[in-house]
Amino acid sequence: MSNKIIKVGSSAAVTIPKKVLKSMSIDIGDNVFVSVDAKNRRFIIEPVVNFKLEEERALRIDEFIRRYKKDLEKVSE
Image (cartoon, rainbow, N blue to C red; front, top):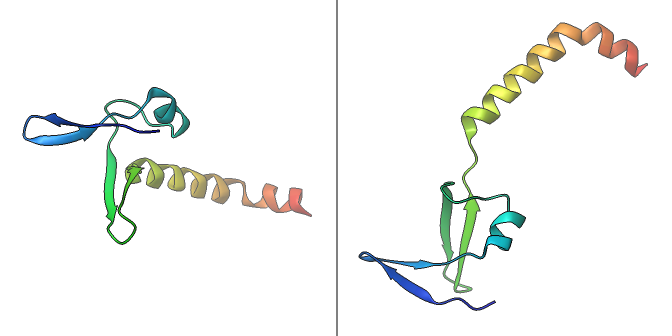
């Protein structure tokens, strides 16, 4: 797939097809991290992980395990 670099204000942009966004679970307005692989002349675009949500999820899982540890151990026998 070939795309053209366009001017946006004093910056440059490349459009990303909707199909590609969907396949990467990225949507308009999401934050992404752009890095450069200069050796291979590539740009890398990755979704920014929301660490706060991940931390909250981990805390809930830990709480669940603590609460149901005995039951979980019985089930695993």
